[in-house]
Image (tube, rainbow, N blue to C red; front, side):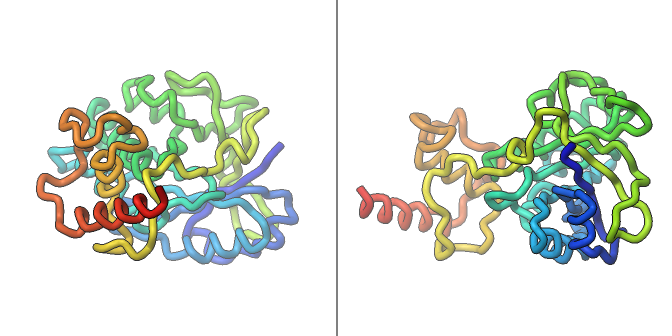
Length: 277
């Protein structure tokens, strides 16, 4: 059994060496919530876990805005906030969406979740983990729309978890919310990988990118999440091979007015590509 934990600022002090010695191989760590909350312990937890060889990944706690008239726009704002704090690096675990707070209609929740997941998938080139639990999925209308995303399922007191509609298997199972791990005071969430699933199977590997991402490109650092899909579209690479600048597939998250620095980035990358040719 490959065992893991998920932690946040609620676990203020963690002795990661003792956690490792207690058989923990991975940790999913809260990075953000909503559009303004950054978990104060995220960086410290990541640094401590990595220092002892525990694989880490970041998760975002969803807070759909019940007053928003545009769930997709709200979700993209939350995704951008998450990416600004915890964009995955090669070798990290897949980014994850913790979806357990509703407030919208089932259709609204589906639209919200789809927009968040798509935003992060486009920005990173990987499908995020989706955390939920069986009862909550009833509030999602038992949709099967997300069956292609790796499932992180919470289900306690059972020998095998109940899978929400659409999924035939899970990747990660949170099987207890009151576990005990040496090195962590109090109770913590316990997780395990499904039989036959390896850590490598939920490890982030950057998707195909149109070009390297040099740090000296014009414009803001880091780049906004819309920039990379727009860049692939303009240059006709990645998922837009043969469709460069085809308006029918223009990324919908790109603003109507593209700032000048974005076009300067294209010019710089085109020159670098020409030198390598």
